Length: 263
Image (cartoon, rainbow, N blue to C red; front, top):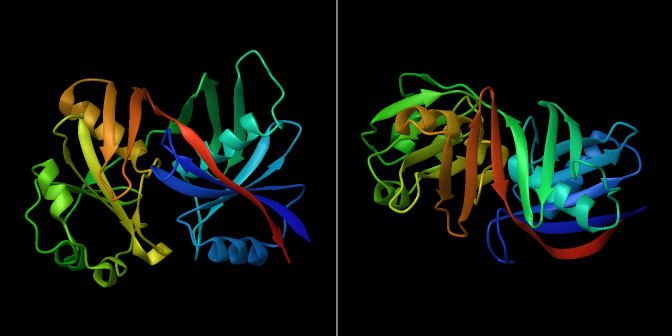
């Protein structure tokens, strides 16, 4: 069997930046074990698989070890391939829609900028489990919250950058991952994201985390349009807008590679 394989740098306007995702278009769904093996072989934080349907596309995301419920950068990467590799039929909205575990997600293109329409994810204050504080080096946070992930509010961008996480301890946590965040020096807020239990020690740019960070920082800063930067080694910027119970995440993407899988 041969399958097309793309690698896209998402939330980036040039290669070697942003968050790399693999994209594999399918004519029909393969067995889940095959999808997981392909994602493991790709060894990127996410591999996106999609199947075209009459209504749009079905989309699924896999880390090297797990299927996940929501992923921003791999959705952006999949839309980028659909728009730019001859698979897109123009419509009035210049948008593609995906049926996913998190409902219908849409991506709209305006020139080279993509806007993802995602659900806003709630956060609530919580007590810190022991592995969380120890895993982040014994920090003293301003606040700890939980939703899909733990979110740790720190004092400054410098504090976020200085964290040296213990991935073994963080992999013991019960939630998907850990997001640390703080006010940005030149942006509204910054963040880093760790999900070692899913085989992703540090994710370069995490769209889904911004579904929770956007409403959180919107309430603090009293504004609905926010510029965010994920201060990982590769780094990336996301333009965030809070739209009621939805979050719009805007960014660029660039194709790094096209190849074939043979098995």
